[in-house]
Image 1 (cartoon, helix red, strand yellow):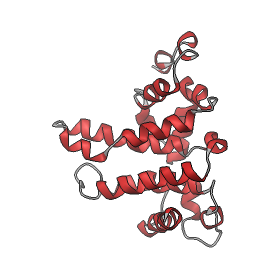
Image 2 (spheres, helix red, strand yellow):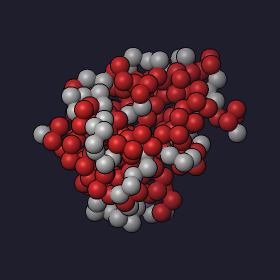
Image 3 (spheres, one colour):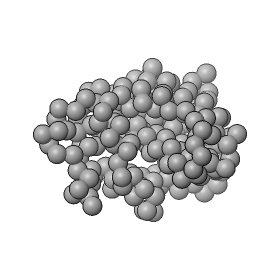
Image 4 (cartoon, one colour):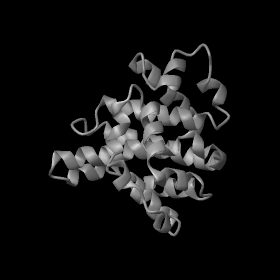
Length: 195
């Protein structure tokens, strides 16, 4: 299955970055992310087994295209789907894209504008999702907080995120929260950063 999902080399080298990102978010084995003990272990495994990521992370416009596609996604669109599995699939793709955007492989592409752009979008999407609890539940806060925290590490908020005294320090290492308050602290730091 893994072998069948790889993009042939002669195709991948000629793909536009936008098309490669679209292919990645439609990768049939995305669900593998949640089969590990932490989100980071899961995303690391998916990244290491699909050649689309290696190629994407080598491209100078990778972050720009990931952010562009994330901007086009809207949590409100799930209400237009009749089938519940399509609603869940769309929500999962949003969470996955947030996790990919925040990976260390892209750290050299972040600047203050892109950090604020992404965090504002994520916070806006989080607020929109609060009104659709049937599709988006509390679970969504975990990958969202983890993604925001990872991006904040590339900003002047790094000390607040990597603070040894914070209760969410272990969450930023393991992606396993001890309590809901840890996530809220990260969202609060993110809100202050963008405002």
